[in-house]
Length: 240
Image (tube, one colour):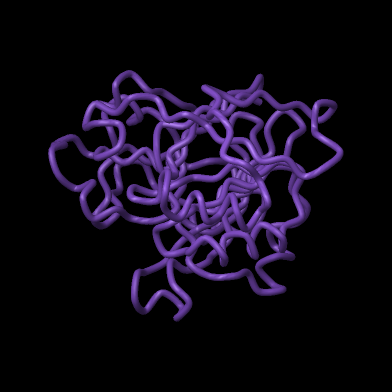
């Protein structure tokens, strides 16, 4: 699996079995998506600014379910307040809890919230567990709280945690959340304003990690997973 950042919680996960793009909001990748394509596009939450500048209707796919079907979406339906960059319109779009199998990629969406008050302040969030090329990764989206025992059980054992820093989750809480998941690879996703000198530096301090040079991408296989917990900063690709 190759992981590339486009900024904030927008990542591209490329594997032999398919390509998954997470949280590709138009304010991050532009209304056209700048050529960013995927087999599957996941959206952990709606983005208020992403409704601007794109006239096309987002296309929603219906993956083959492995379990619950409550979160299936029909082609042509539209998520309230959500716009999808034109380059990602052909992708299957997942934005709710459930179990899915798309292009032989197994994905589980777990309901969480963007604040510590059941979403009453900032709304709902979906954490997506993605199994790609034998690697289990959880993309936490814009989660704003520590996970309950039930949520941890739904997520299960993971190799890679992509954790938001800033947004609704301060640095200390982000470090606690990482400890809950006990993964070998940690990929911080700094939200705007959480970069150098801010929440990201505080998060690295909480994790007892020095601020190293960000990498343009991260390649990971089951055999390359580190034996000790390792944090990797990714350099976001330029925004449109």
